[in-house]
Amino acid sequence: MKQHIFLASPHMSEEGYEQQYVKEAFDTNWIAPLGRNVTEFENEITAKLSAPKAVALSAGTAAIHMALKAVGLEQGDLVFCQSLTFSASANPIVYEKAEPVFIDSETDTWNMDPQALKLAFERYGKLGKKPSAVIVVHLYGICAKIREIREICDEYEVPLIEDAAESLGTVCHGRYTGTFGDYGIISFNGNKIITSSGGGMLLVNAEDAEEKAKKVLYWATQAREPAPWYQHTEIGYNYRMSNIVAGIGRGQLKVLDRRIQKKRYIFEYYQKHLGILPGISFMPMPEDAYCNCWLSVILLSEDCPVSPMDIMRALQEDDVESRPVWKPMHLQPVFADYDFVTTVSELHITDTQMGADSSVSGQIFAHGVCMPSDSKMTDDDLQRVCQVVRGLWKSV
Image (cartoon, one colour):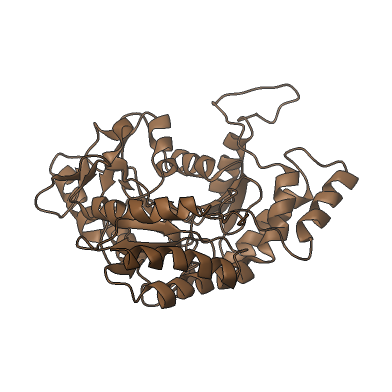
């Protein structure tokens, strides 16, 4: 039987670094949400990324929630959020009973369109409103037009939250993603480029980083006051990362650069062996950027003889995982009542089954396929995937 090929799965270090740190936690009995691994993981992340402060949390979603709390988000406030992303980027906005306004993508990076963002500021400015924050996402490890977005946020004096959950290790304009915004988000979920089995990290880059990080830590540990008894003056959250999880993360961080090299190799392999097929293009690689290529994504033209579902079904029959591009948030039923800002002049539904529309993000969703990008894939695995895909073109 053929071996199953994953889309992206955990890949522990060949040297066993993770087990060494976890063993240390067991040997010292520091297995709860305190301990040397947690502190050192934060320190090692800040050293690697040149970020002022970091707080290790239970998930990337928790990090977004804490970032929104840190900027002072309140009930009824607006947050401008990238539409083409996973729902975790937007859900915490609603946790705080605030209102997301979804921003369309552009074709150069597939990420937030600075022109649409500017349009949103102008539209709501006429109503006397301004968002409490902007959330930009570096989709699939592709860096957004972060300088332009940063400049717009500075012009309107609005904090920028940078969702770098998928882009750990991506370098743009000589800096790591996650360090351009006032806050940066990292995820260590099981499918990410490195994993701690779960967990996330909040990078605090604001001017008062020390105080902001301290406040986040307070909220993330149930907002307990420094009293001999359990005293609370604010609502808190159980969001702290455990010492065991942090130990796995420390070991994984040692092989981050190696994993990025392999992810980029996979992307280049697909480019070489599938790029010759008519109707196929690939996710963009922006200039002045070194992207981690967390997932390799292909895009099929409208007149392509093969559809995304054709590819995904054929791969599934060969026991190979793939999946569609994220369905944009403005097309999700749960967010149907919220505003969407795009520079596309006329919006209309282009695929009634998928619910895709004519927006830039809607078209990327309708025509994109996330290819298997597991860092444990061999050349034989990659060849097998490419043979399945090329076979579809031979049959049409």
